[in-house]
Image (cartoon, rainbow, N blue to C red; front, side):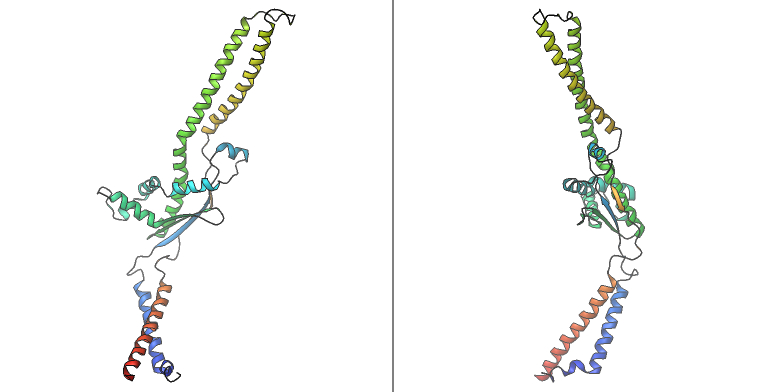
Length: 286
């Protein structure tokens, strides 16, 4: 067995394999250089999704993190074609990727290219990672930060109609109750003064009206409180995203991994030479 593998340790063979491995690594390192392959740079922004409801933020003194459902919903916004359209308009991505959106399927190809360069995912600490890869390091960072900002803008636009509908509903409830209370006040003002005798005429009706009036007054106060809260919330923007780590331009490419590919080329060369040498030895024996 030792004699069969003796050729592995011959200095001439080892030197030849080592030289070939080094040459393969250098060749791969050169082949993956920016002279031949345009590198991709990656930038990452880390954010926490806030509570969506302003009232909940108010109750927690402006500090509150979104639930699992709110995090998932925000991620969907960051991966939406609405955001891709805004991103394309801001950076001119169709021109950068050389895609004619006027052609059939052009817009879909643009979305696919943008989606392939963007990765949005929830981390183990319930934050959200926004990663962008691009040929230009600064543009990758700018795009990642733009995605974070656009997410808040799109969420505000999407929820504005619902917020207005809730405000109008609360306003109508308040005005309806106020109209009902005004009508009761007008009727009570036309009633004669309360009779001193509980057994006198109109006593029970006046007592009943007074009880109804107090109930309506309490309900009106509750509805007015809700109405004014929603009215004030419309004047304030939705809670913004907590940016805990804005994206910055990377100094080194993310792809291709030149050192890893060079090492792999060396190992492949060594494996191929071992197989070739073993086949040659077997052929000589036969």
